[in-house]
Image (cartoon, rainbow, N blue to C red; front, side):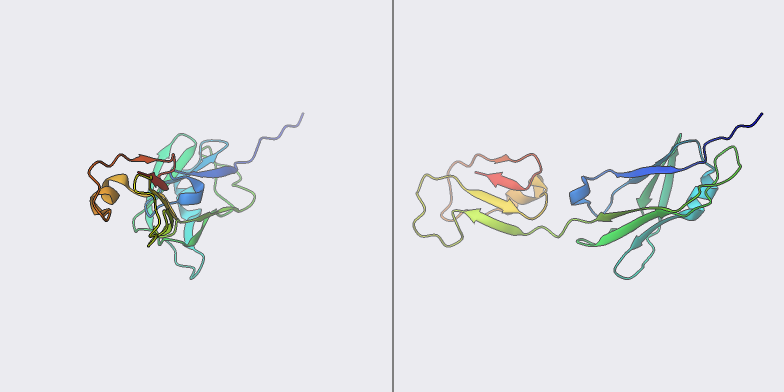
Length: 171
């Protein structure tokens, strides 16, 4: 009579931020197919900035089969980072560890910049009662933008709305 058991393995990671707009302080989660030996996983986990190989320190937070990693330093904007768990991470019950390395990449969002405006900057033929649209390169914090937005000549009543990713302001 013979049988075998499944080896531990990581399934694709998740990030607390939308994949295309990873911020400076994300939580990166890796879920395994079984409960893992925490020390074995933490020793093999790496978050590395691809450009220079700089290892990013952080704290681990466990919940069942999943480990969360929160960097203790802010990630640099517009950079590629490599997330990996090296082979050999054992299950909580012991035995043979993961058979192969698991790795993923994430790209941090660029610094916010204005990509375009409607009407265009300096437009002298804009209709006086037209709406305004500002498109940004990455999501914008609404509460920090509006107090710093100046409309010339000043408007008496300004109504705003945003797209779902907070990248376009309509006024």
